[in-house]
Length: 169
Image 1 (cartoon, rainbow, N blue to C red):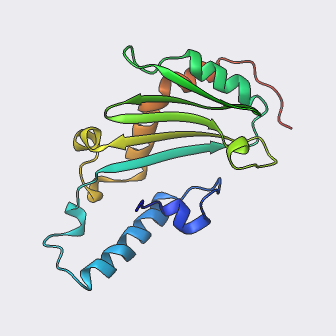
Image 2: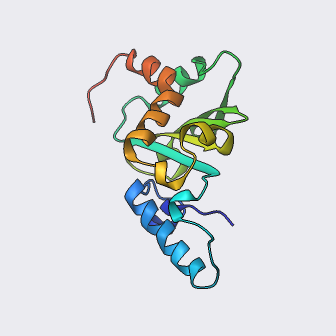
Image 3: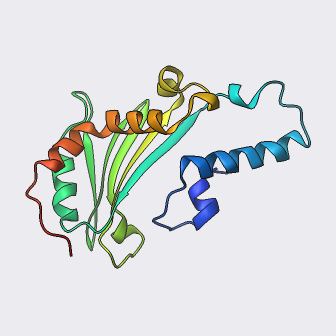
């Protein structure tokens, strides 16, 4: 069973993402339930993180397909490759996967059938990366999340910022 605070709060296909504060509330509610039946054997702050997903959603976006093409052409690290996913309706996402993390950029309006063009960038960090950057629940905060996100997607952001800007819809 997957634990996804955004799904818990907003439903499976939502474009909305849970904030860190909302996520921590859900985690504490789950831990309250667990502690009613088991002894945790330590502080909640010492709980190790095995994976964390971070995302940023942009809407409206006037050039979603061009942004996906640009991300596909831009490597995030010298030894990683981007994989482009298409559907009959257009480019859906670009994914860059390494053993310790996965980064993707997707047309959320295609995936969730939204009327407003929406782009989402997602970062999934695994335990090997978190051991160094954010080992426990106590170390998880907004500035650190922002730093981890920006570090992982910096090349894509820079490449997309260099595109000609078009006025919003």
